[in-house]
Length: 310
Image 1: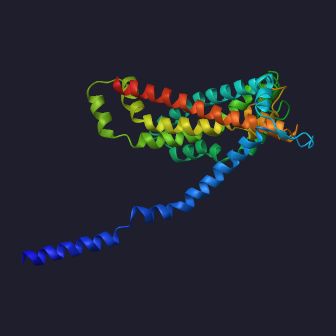
Image 2: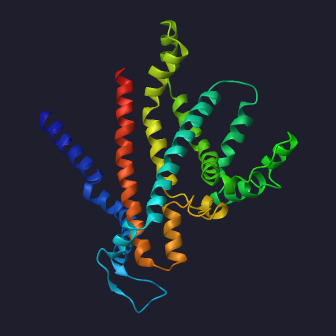
């Protein structure tokens, strides 16, 4: 009897081993996706890195060859590049603060029950589904226009003088547009995090006599730690690459007031036809994005850990 049981046990183990896929087979199944991602990401980056060390201007095809660090030296002494760098960082930081704060406020609001909640939530989410080019055109022609815009009509209605927002407050206008477009994203993600917060935990804190502020600070914010991290990281990536809103409204101006790194690269490649310097600027943007991400991760993680310890 014992030998029969042993034989059956070995047989079952052998069958299970045959049915269980090996690690090698699963890796081969993932290989096409991995290869596609490598080709999609590494090849353009490698070509950009290559051209950043080349003298390659479409207007001067005879002046070609290895440039060494020449293109990077041009960027280093170009004040417009440094202005674009500062503009990019300011745009990202201000838009992050606005979208996260407003998104959290809207998420807390829509986490409550009130009449017309579904309709209000749909209207609040709608801006996120508007394409960036359309966003720029809507704000430029329908809201910010000093003659036909809605804001101009409102100023005239109260006896005021309409403001040419894109001419006098160009950076503020760009920040308003991008924040209007991305606040719904932060709201959706944070609202999902709030809805996963156990109600029993909140009731226990309320029974202990905690105020609304202490409940928000010590329960809600630590619970939303990972969600806030996701929102900040994803929005930072998109804010660093903001282009369409600037292209359709200010064109980087007045002067270089709204020229960020993506628009600076666009101008260098499609107006000056200097592929070498533009590629060097693109590599600089990649380095900036990675440095920004590293510091942002440490900053967010440090604050969340400090909040959890409290």
